[in-house]
Length: 89
Image (cartoon, rainbow, N blue to C red; front, top):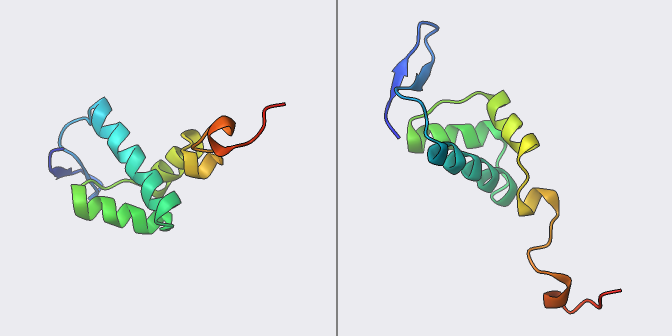
């Protein structure tokens, strides 16, 4: 990921468009920080800005959490019923 540029509104934006891989990485990072490490949206945005020098809005992060579900936030078991010893009906 490349460094940020400052827009006319004074906010920092990526110097280039983020690739699909970069967007997927950031989405996974949002879920890990929020669902696993239990950070608030503002805390995770601060961590992303510090680590990747990319500033995003609260709405962006909330949209990712709402639109893309992970195993932790969707309640999907990581093991099948057969693996967990449950009897299939």
